[in-house]
Every structure is written in C-alpha cells, then in structure tokens.
Length: 429
Image (cartoon, rainbow, N blue to C red; front, side, top):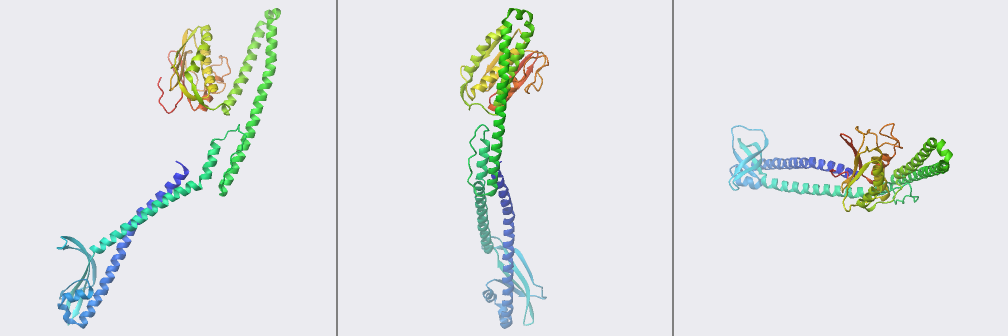
C-alpha cells in the first residue's frame, strides 16, 4: 500500500472511529439536556399552580383552568397523605393515536384549605422526541458529510504534498549509471524534499563515478589480457606449423593453445557478464523468437552430429515477444553449448519453444547437477572443463529480462533447463 493511501486510511479510521463514538454520545447528551429542560419546565409550572391555588382555592375543582394556566397536562385529586416530589417517564395508552406514548411526569402534593391533594403534571414527549430525533439525524448527517469531506481533502492534500517525493522516487527508479545527464530538478519549497533531492543527486553522481571507473578497469583489463594472448596464440600456431616443433612438442603446444583459448573465452565472458549486470544492453523490441531459435539450432546441427548426438526441435512458425536480441541469442547459445558439452551419446538434445517459455533437455550424467549450478565458476564436478560462467550468464540474462530459469532432473539421465517468459503464469511442459 502506498504511503499516501496508508496515511489517508489511518486518518479515515480515526475519523470514523470518532464518528462512531460521537453520534451515540450526541444522542445521549441531547436526550439528557432535553429531559433536564422538560423537568425544569415541570418544576416552574408546579410553582405556578401552587401560587394559583393559594390565591384561588376554588380552582382546585376546575381542571381546565389549571391546564390553561400552565399549558400542560394536569391531574389532581384529594389524598390522605402527602407524597414527596418525583420525576419519571411513563408509557400511557393514547386513544387518539391508538398506541403507547411516552410522558414525563412530576408528582407532588399541595395543600388547599387544609386538604391535601395529589398533583400530577405531565408532558407528552412524542412530538418533542420526534423533533429531537430529526435534529440528531440532521446533525449526524452533517457530521458524516464533514468527516467524508475532511478525508477526501486530506487524501488530495497528501497527494499534493507528497508529489515531490514520488517525482524523486520515479527518477531513482529510472536512473541508469551509464547515463551522464543529471537528475531533473524538482520544484519544491519543502526542506526535507530539497534535502532528499540533493542526496539523490549526490548518490547518483557517486554511482556514475564508480561505474565509470569499474567500466574503464574492465575494458582496460580485457584489452590488456587479449593483446598478449593474441601474440601467444599466434606464436603457438606458427610453432605448430613447423614440422620439427609439431613432432617434438605437439602435446605441449596443444595444451598451451587450449589454455590460451580458455583464458580468452574467460575474459570475454566476464566482460559480457559485467555488461549484463550493469544493464549495458539495448532496449527490448519485438522479436520472432521462433526464427532466432530455429536459426541457431540449425547452426549447431553439425557440432551435435560430430559428437554422435541428435538435435530435435518443437518450434512454432512464429513467436513474437518483447526481448533484447543479443541477450536472447546469448542465453540460447549458452544453453545449447551447455547441453552439447555435457550430453552423453547416443542421445537427443530436444529444444521446445512456446509462448510460455523455452525448454532444453539433454541426456547426461545419471545424477542431478548441484544446487549452486547457476553460481559463477560453478561446475558439475571438478573433472569438467570450462569456466563455469555459462549458466551464470543465463541466470543474469533472465534477471535482466524479468524471466525465470529452472533446472530439473529426471531418471535415468535427463537434464532439463526451463526458461519461463511470464513467471506469473502457470508453466506447462
């Protein structure tokens, strides 16, 4: 989840949590204040009736006059003993509405002309209660709308405030050490983002300097190695052409020639591996992998036949895919060379290609390869010749192309390498 969305979600949860607590509290507080107001009104009207009865004792028998004086419901009847004042809410059946309705009542005792009377003042809560509920709904609605508007404004404001951060992040994602152009400047007045931009540019400059130094070292080292190797190889070839040298020193010269060629191939592979790791290759383009695979398999037919093996293919007519040609050709050649080198004749090297991936199977040793076969300088065994870089290059190419490479072994002696073009899809053999 993005930082902006996470912050907005955090604020939203707090906001709606407060909303969930505040609405019930608002309802309780409103009801409490409303009942206190009703109770106060009942107390005031009780005192009005007491004063009225003191001045006009005959009004005790005129209920309508008492109700007009206080504009409340009034019940009064003679009582043998006085009662203390009490306030309570009661449900009573109303014939007009054919339902029970809540009333707030004040019960007290008054003495008129030496006679004690039981006086009850009551107030119908239905209409006022409906009004209070509508008011609470209105206030709750306004509160919810306010919270939603606040959340949306906070989200929009966060996106606006964090925009320089995402711009800097996008620059770092697209940063390439082989590009000399500086990172584009970000217009911001926020001090933290200004510092981040400055640090990002400094890191980019340091990485460019390190990369340039490393690249120059590798190129110089490769050039310096290739030059004496070429001289040595030429001298060896000249010696091998001499009859006396060829007869007397054929074994020594042959070993020397093989060693020189091995060192030459090793330096070239190390240079190529370094270029892949540093992203020094062309951009992806639409390639017909079927045509490329078919061509390079045909080029290998003669070498395969010389070793007493066969090469079979299962390729579609066309297979367009976004890839880098030089990387795919390098991957294919390394896998074919690896299969040819370690295949046991007689047998068949099988190449299968489809939209899901590439599969190369060859017969070989009766035991599986070690788990670290994709590491640099890793070999199936000490006796095997080679630099141990071919499968490491395959691994790095797959990483650069966002593919996956897998190795499988099946009895009695089948070794399979799978290149998965779309790792998220299920691969079927």
